[in-house]
Image: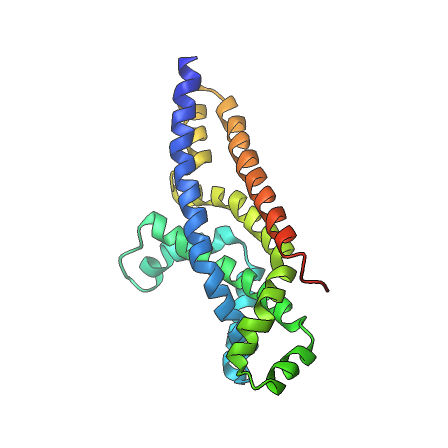
Length: 216
């Protein structure tokens, strides 16, 4: 019983880092992804081309590789002092998920019929007013399902932080394998992920129901 309690406390500590990485990634990547989507749809060709290239590279390479590059790259390539471990992994996660979110935003924005933009112009609204008053809520409804899938994937991807020795929940469990020969703490981490993802699933379903008045 004492061992179980000690394992639980250690896993809770590791899960705290997992939650911190998860929350900060969302705080920065959700708005940054929207900005990236505007850049990729820009009529200024050099900007849109550069943004599309960045998105292609980020989506086409493993997140694990990106974490390693962000952590070791500045020191090995530029001779700079390397970033601390947590800021490095956060930067990699934010950049990665901003690119994924940007494509979801872009798909949602481009799915809105052009007639709605034209109707807003007829009413004398500016492009900004049309976007925030007419388009945005419809976009949110359309992107909730793919966005929720990406966010749940983010919960599981946080385990990659241990690649550069960030003390997240799976790292906490692995300590018991090496020190005491116990493997069950590793399986115990699954309960943390399942419960947290279950909560997120319920939250997203409620959000979808609240947006049901937007049809089509």
